[in-house]
Image (cartoon, rainbow, N blue to C red; front, side, top):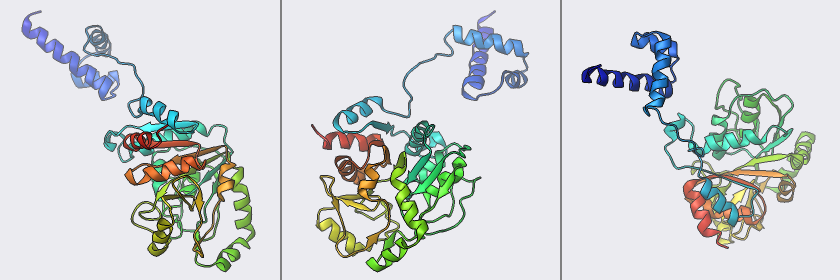
Amino acid sequence: MGRAEEDLHDQLLQRIAHHYFVGGMLQSDIAAVEHLSRPSVSRLLTEARERGVVQFRIGPPVDRVPELETELQRRAPLHACIVSTGKPRALYANSSRLGYVAARYLESQLSHVRLLGVASSRSLSGVVESMVQAHRRDLTVIDLLGCLPGGRADRGRRTGSASVDGGGPNTARLIAAWLGASFRALPAPFVHKTASSLEAALSATVVRETLELGPHSELALVGVGSMKRFDGTGAYSPIPVKELDELETRGAVGHLCGHFLREDGSVLEPSGGPFLLGIAADGLRQIPQRLAVAAGWNKVRPIAAAIRGGLISELVTDQATAASLVRLLHP
């Protein structure tokens, strides 16, 4: 074989290896494209591995940062710290890297869970979009926060129009639909302007029973919010800005499940309203696994407060947020 033939052969090895290992093509399809027999493709793939055209490296998943996970868990009293890399979201199509990593971790924890409590929020939408469809008829998903009935959560879609007080998706309902699970709604507004309005909502049997069931969840999925806007997106605030400013003046740095938190993790209740309908802080602490998914510079102090207050036991966040938490949660 002359030099020119050798060069052509080497180029063929690279093309076939790329088709198979990068493009995911079947050997029969490669054979058709390259006008070869299938046995020839198999022999060329073997040659590509032996000659180093194809090189394998075994290491930790590239979507997580194990060193940062270890350091964050050393500084924070959490059972698990999951940190996603800061690589571009395009690697997982329309799903964010954080949502993808959080969905994989949540799915790994659900095998023995029968009651899953979810505090619906926009910040959890990336988790829903990245979940794998399943058929968990033995699982019941429970609303942990008041959610007015909205649109329909379509089993064939990653998103839906079921709403939380008209402001965003009912994440709990969407997760139940995607997992093929039962759904237990908390069909009442989350925010009430008066105590009498809240009492009226609590008079409904279905509302009381769902609230009582929430603390019996084996796993809770929650978001963590900042004081920038109540839901953390800057697009929707069920609590007026005036009240948010007043709470911040009194020391609130963030919120979780409708409970405003001071820096030390203690709960700061609004004075004179508005009144929020959802799981109590003590009820949340009764749930064995309390998984928070949150990231962003404005979530660092709220996450730290939730950790200090014992409201979460596990955290999924991104690399930049985790690094900031490590600096903040110094020994």
